[in-house]
Image (cartoon, rainbow over all chains, first blue to last red; front, side):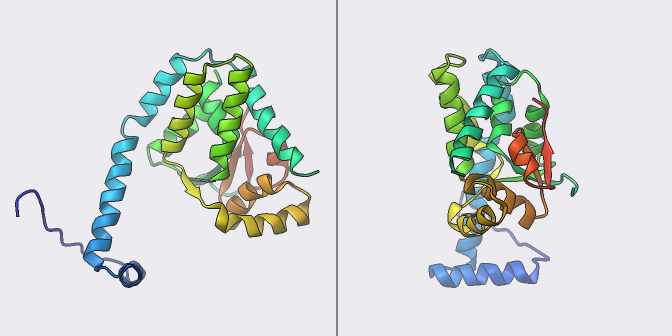
Length: 86
Length: 137
């Protein structure tokens, strides 16, 4: 079938193999389907993250960077956390 | 303190990575993004980062657009999010035992149970566990 490939994966640890079988059983699917879903999800995550750090650097160029501002934000979090101790 | 190949990231570190001129927190996110360090945070971190960014918008320190973008970067980061459904029960036990808030306890439980270093820019949180590494502000 065009656009698809077949992968053979060697040396799969026993616990991983068991986990895949268990997940397939729980979801009523096959080990192949479970592995494919995991691979697709991970590749999606990888694609989303590609250029992530460069994007963050770009965002920082659009912000008036300041330790004082960061202190303010961190203090806001701390105030909320402390309220949880009352 | 354990070696920092596995870290729990506090929301305060994400906020410093976004808005602090000091690049220390940013450097940690570069290492995490490069895969040099495995990182996790409780899902709580997203709400806390949103709160911190909202604080900055209200104080006219950043635009709302920058806040939205900053939060999006946090959500899309390589830091794995641990569900609160898993964390809240041990966090409650820790909060009661150590007189910390359940919010703090979520991070401490993750770090101590996983023998990970808790990266934080929050002095109070750092003081609550010997697993913490306090980033300079």
